[in-house]
Amino acid sequence: MTESELEEIDCTIYNDFFQNILEAPGCIIPAGTLESGKNYYMLYTWKADEFSDTVADFIELKTIITDPSCRIAGMPGVLYFKNVDNLLDANVTNERTDFEYKWSCEPLGDGQCDLNQRVAQNGPDLTVYGANFEPDFAQFQMTLNIMIGDNVLSSCSATVEKVPDEP
View 1 (cartoon, rainbow, N blue to C red):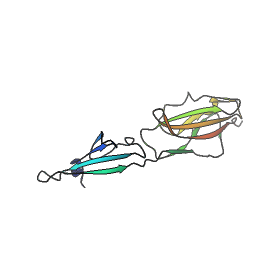
View 2 (cartoon, rainbow, N blue to C red; view 1 turned 135 degrees about the vertical axis):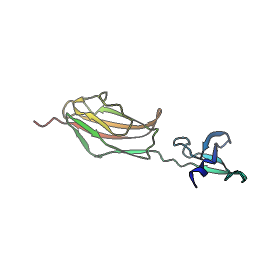
View 3 (cartoon, helix red, strand yellow; view 1 turned 45 degrees about the vertical axis):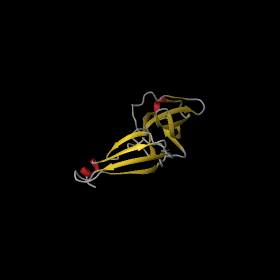
View 4 (cartoon, rainbow, N blue to C red; view 1 turned 180 degrees about the vertical axis):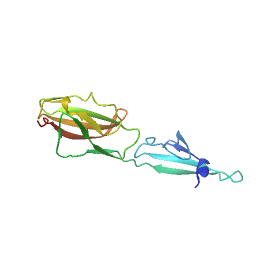
């Protein structure tokens, strides 16, 4: 189909109770609109040209939306932070533009960590300054939560250890 033909297609998405939940010009359904595992019905209408009848039909949609997952590079194992910028490189599968990425830090034993210095970001990777982790040789659990609103869709963690700079 050409782009102009797609402009002539319109879709309306209905839930199981045949309540209209979305008008979708060009039958484009934005990511995050439908919920995984639910049934939906789509009424599409198309008119080829001004001399043709309008074609309309219902199609049943079964949504299969795979939740995201993540993994931090270097895991399993321990990552070592020095008093410089340190990158936590997270690989996210099934990534979407409406995800929010929130990192947290918890000491594993005695220690303190501060993520307040990080630059505002909305991506899975995080750069942290090692000097904000105290004391040397303390270990910390760094956790990435992948969220939409208040809902945590997936999380992954890494163990990091603060090490002194070499003299």
